[in-house]
Length: 238
Ligand code: SF4
Ligand code: SF4
Image 1 (tube, rainbow, N blue to C red):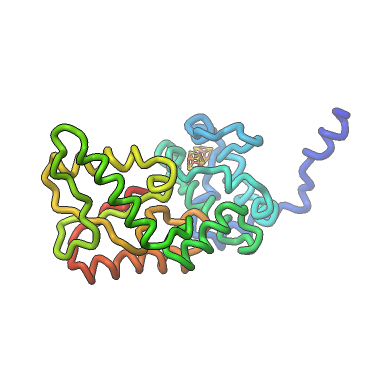
Image 2 (image 1 turned 90 degrees about the vertical axis):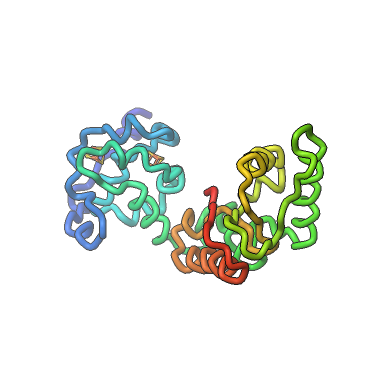
């Protein structure tokens, strides 16, 4: 049993293709295998994932194996590894690039479906506009019942507001309490804010799936909304 396991971990040196990594826009070929990234990574050890291994695989030309593996999808893209890497290697950038190289229909199900739905309907839940507005107004009414917030209202599509905020989909699904924290801060700070009635999705599904076109499309929708409403500032919580 142990012998089989050991054999499967043997690297065939004839498969190494170090030159392959030169076509990448990243600095993975200067990794000195110090492992500082591994010790800072919050998901090191999950399914044997380790950022150093990912960097080394690209550097050694094992692109295809990495594209097929689960590792780039385990990375949360938090950037902690990059901030401590003495060689300044953009490890989350590498993870995203590897994700972008996977066939779109092989992107992990929840992300693939979420992105398709967000592109089609403006949010990954496929929530109709009227349901979204109902939830927003309902949460606002709950806040207005609290002492000190009696006049609270959630301004939807307010033209000329100072700040437009997008919303993480779970905040209108299962975590509406978290929505209240943001809005109460706006109220106390006397912020002139608004929330869009359409394309309010605050999760950049294109970013997480390595799909630049989708990312541009979703970001473009938010930018268009700001232009139409003449809002100058954006709070994109994710
Ligand atoms: S911290 Fe940077 S140099 Fe060190 S192993 Fe990780 S990627 Fe390589
Ligand atoms: S960006 Fe990815 S690899 Fe780097 S620390 Fe965060 S989870 Fe780990």
